[in-house]
Amino acid sequence: MEFTEYLNERVAPSTSKRYQREVRLFRAYQSSKNKSIQSITYSDIMNYIGQLRKEKKNVVCSLYGIKKYCEYLVKAGARKDNPARSIRLRDKTSREIQLQDFFTSQELEQLLERKERYSLLKNRNKLIVSLLIYQGLTNGEIKSLELKDIDLEQGTIYIKQGRRTNSRSLKLKAKQVYWLMNYIEKDRVVLLKEESEILIINQKGKAETGEGISYLVETMRSMFPERKLNAKTIRQSVITNLLKQGKDLRLVQAFAGHKYPSTTEKYKQSQVEELKLEILKYHPLR
Image (cartoon, rainbow, N blue to C red; front, side):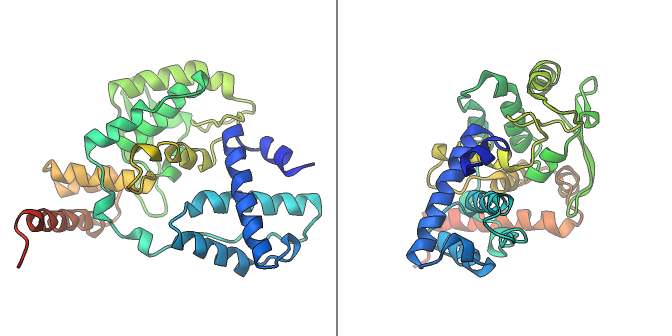
């Protein structure tokens, strides 16, 4: 089985093409270092990721592609081990709240205007984007949603407790209920290829793993080419915008699922820093 065929059985066609491109770049880089694919190690992959970071490239998509490629090599018998299996990106710098990456509520709304190539995915993708920009959910929270977590009659959605977040029940907007109804009753039925209680089903008919959500957001980066657009910066923007509107800190903490008030406080502090930057624009210190 060729790598392309291996991918096409597991991910959507668009994702497959992207992963193939990332693997070609990875292989070219290793070749320039006189490294064969059979001899690459964990360190070789991490060095490559480090190079991508320096070039400000999308390391997440690249790592997903490399992981799939290493899985394929083991499956095909070209390697006995998978050097990428244990790699988890844990960038301390990425945890910082970056003011330049904030998006206003109006800018976030623009993400819903993304044109959809596949009519079957229209409601699903609008639903995913809306959960990011209205409820500020994380990638992990969205992919973990189950059918039982949706209450269309009450117009609410239940988010389970995570490693870093508390469980909570959030109100849905009317248009989200509409997208949910159409997706659950029509689109999801067509997409589903194997029994699953997971709400979001990918183009292959299986439970969403999170890769598809990351890729969906990535397709919208051209709308804001100079800024870092991903699920995390969208969530940070949603929380910050609520505090800007004067919402009580405790209510925002409950909305975001923050386990500690100090986590929400960081967003309050970011507003102070933002105000300082605005003041300096018009009244620079001499």
